[in-house]
Amino acid sequence: MHDVIVVGGGIGGIGVAALLAKQGRKVLLLEQLDRVGGKCVSHKKEGFHFPVFIHAFARGSKGSRAHIARMLGEEIAWTTINELPICVNGEWMGFTVKGRPIGVKLPLKDVLSLAMLALQTLPKLLTKKGQDELDRTDLRSWLQRRTDNPKLHAIVGYMAGAFYAIPYWEASLGETIQIFRGLMKGKIAYPVGECEAIPETLFTGFKKHGGEFKQENVKRIVVSEGKVQGVELSDGKLLEAPLVISNAGIRRTVLDLVGEEYFDKGYVNYVRNLRSSWSALVVHTVLSKKITDKPGGLYAKSLDVEGYAEQLERGEIPQKPYMWCMVTTNWTSSFAPPGKQIICFGCPMPFREGADWKKWADRVLESGEELFPGLNEHMIFREVIPPDYIQSWTDKEGLGFPVAQTTQQVGANRPSMISPINGLFYVGHDVANSGKTRAIGVDAAGESALECAEIVASGLGPAR
Ligand SMILES: Cc1cc2nc3c(=O)[nH]c(=O)nc-3n(C[C@H](O)[C@H](O)[C@H](O)COP(=O)(O)OP(=O)(O)OC[C@H]3O[C@@H](n4cnc5c(N)ncnc54)[C@H](O)[C@@H]3O)c2cc1C
Image (cartoon, rainbow, N blue to C red; front, side):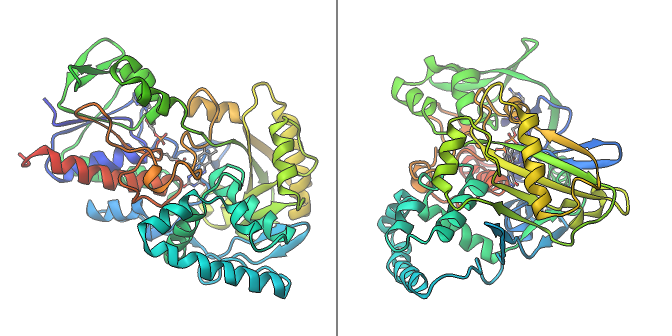
């Protein structure tokens, strides 16, 4: 019998599985696909490589995934991205990740007001009560207290869209400050060897420390008398273990894999009502030649960030979609054959069944042309990744992040990785422990693996 079964090999799952194997535990990792990594995956076509989901990794070599790799005795090499410029209303502004966060030209009165606001806000970070208050404060109301400068509101609003895929009136100030503190310490980066380099490195560490992997779909997590017993595979086979860690998402685990009858009603309602983020449309353009040296950036034509969000909620396709763009070949040449360039665009948006994604992609490329003149002339083909495809990876609602980083779901209010069932834990982007995790995307999934390994190890008894 295994000490631990880990269900799902996303970065959270492979991370915790490898760390527990390193501690000498007998770990079985079950993944429904034929490789680990979950959403940390590229798609390959005609000699070109496209990251499907993850286009930038916060904190690079200082982030959680790199830390886990080092704990396993492995190393991930990174290409760093020093600048992500932002183009608002046709004007390019420097947004450097290291040193100065945003180089925006603002009237003196706004600069002074913001400085006052920062002075009043920052001491709160030092106490738990103050931090809780900042976590519950949304970015819009915080900004509104000192400035109505539309340019600043647009930048903060659209950045909340890019970072969390939610409107800025739902995004948390406390979380954003903490995440930016983390970003200042490391750089936004991309792994050498593309995104697969991360799960492959963690998997090497997992195998080296004696972990066992099977490609299996887990149909059910078996619970009896309030305690986990193991898992049932899709062919009906039962595998026993005193501990199961699920990387399948908290909502899927509770509602589908365990079954709501095993939890009290209040907990089921809590899990069911967790707020998910918007989804996104991703368009990769493959170009016959290099047309830009920029690493990427953010693009917003309109300063009316609220009107833009309302338009999306109504299901309208904006004339000028807000988007982030990443010139992937400027960081990692292996994405394309020599001399070619790939520019990737992404638009955060609410999921809508049956939306016209082709029309959306056409609009994206019209705006793309403004950012990168010559884009359409030199395009060989485009690869569109619509929200319907993203939906097939997440759950029924076509989401970016199944648990969004809203004011109600961060810090101490992030869903706990400790389930009410004895021996059942969750790991991955959605969950954390005791308010410690302050990260986004894959970095958050890695943080949860570190936390989960700590908690589980402390309850497991001596290693064999
Ligand atoms: C459009 C989009 C863009 C994004 N861009 C970025 C970005 O630029 N930077 C960034 O850091 N993050 C980004 N993210 C977020 C990032 O992809 C996720 O936060 C992260 O990959 C989640 O990792 P995870 O370990 O929580 O789970 P996942 O990657 O979702 O892994 C879960 C694993 O569990 C497996 N599984 C599920 N159910 C079962 C079962 N029953 N049996 C066996 N296996 C099962 C799945 O196959 C999968 O391998 C983006 C997400 C989206 C949707």
